[in-house]
Image (cartoon, rainbow, N blue to C red; front, side, top):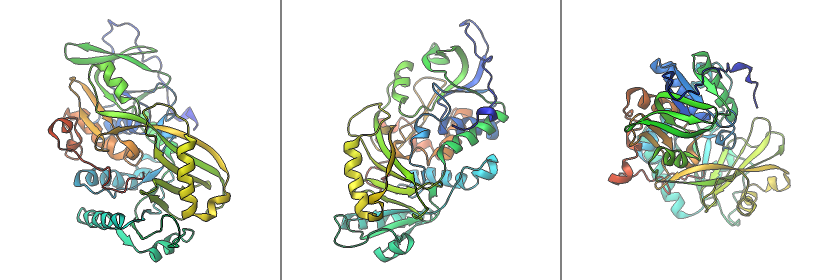
Length: 407
């Protein structure tokens, strides 16, 4: 965990008297990437600095510490492309804006094709990306090999490489440093960050939320924003409404440290695995979402074993790599594999959830649009299509099979 001396703490700004009128303009529940980004953009873009970020554990200790680190914007549907491309543009200036090195590396992201259906879908997605002004290329197997020399493109393997999409601007960043960068700047702008503060209930006056009950007392608020990945449905039930999401463990692992040999990010939707190499040298590999609902932050060996067998066929060089650790992140998954960012049925309460495997890459864009929504009590055009109401109207943004979503 990073040095906490960069983060001024203000535990005195907690109120235990339920009759007290003191509080914050905005309380954000969740001290991960989305919650901290939202706090920063509220302060820097909208001048709202009377903000508290509440984290039940330690800063960035939830899903922010258990993600893929992959950044891309090559989604099929216009709505998704707009939101993730805004996030990509923010990523490209993030280190300069925050004055903090987050090891953002635009080494490219490659999505492999193993079947003719994969090829057709990928070519369609490349053309859609280009129409939306997003960088995208289609590669034949030899071009795949030129960009990533260690990959096996033999036609004899179980999942032969028939081609791939490639987004050169995609890449990775160091996930916990991203959270600390946002936290540091938000704190400098006056935001309070309160750790070890679990929300246990909501205060209401009629149909409006007026604060939260926590393990450290009552905190009054003009507005409350949910940004707690994996636990949004539990918080929504506390507040008195339901979300159309399910929580699942998402599997990943890292190897011991090795010399840098993997030049890009390679993903395969057909076998649902991704492989990249972190700045220090560990191989970062991920597998699928467990089919069962759960909140376990641990690796499922059954899932990992199957996915790693496929990964080793694509990368025979990794067969002798030593496993360092496995884990499971908890992801919220909606019916259409797209997030929810917007208002809720309760006045003064907002929600940001349902990102599935897209949460890390969406941190800047989610925080930027969510801050606008909270400040104006209305969505920005980029997140307006991602409202809760779409599950009633049927205007879904179905990225399940559309965007080669391996992560």
